Image (cartoon, rainbow, N blue to C red; front, top):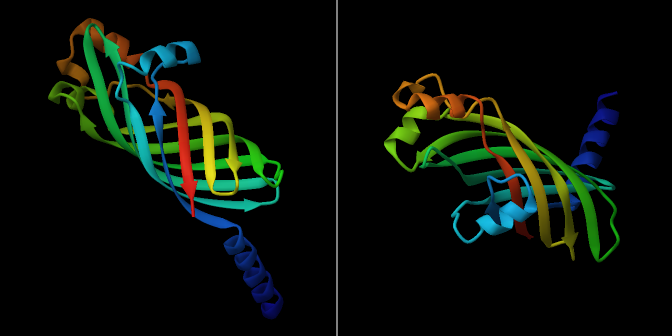
Length: 190
């Protein structure tokens, strides 16, 4: 039994290693929920993400864990909130290998921790821990290039428990809202 289990583990490791790639990813984040508003936001917002990923394709299933730094932002009562998060995510992809391209759909849960706020008031008001999910479509081209478009939604509230320093109107809005929007990602895999 031990020999059979060892053979299975070695076979799975070999297959996984043969179809695994390390990559660099980067892209644009919008805190708008539709493509038209996201496109108009591109000239004024400096919201972006960049990081590393590890892609494993086994047949129609792809798993892509990644570690990124993501800037997110919103505007409440003429105060602009920009925050930077270190995010860990695991994208689960279903796609077809068409030799030149592999189109796929993706679902991606994520968790992150805030490491930047554009003002001290932003750091004091916002939750440090974020979590949520993204859903979207994408394609791997020539097995080395990837392009994805996702809608993402942070769960929970933007305002944390220590949000007493904000004005009452802004605090009420922050307690009922969180970041969501469009994320466009390009990647190069080795």
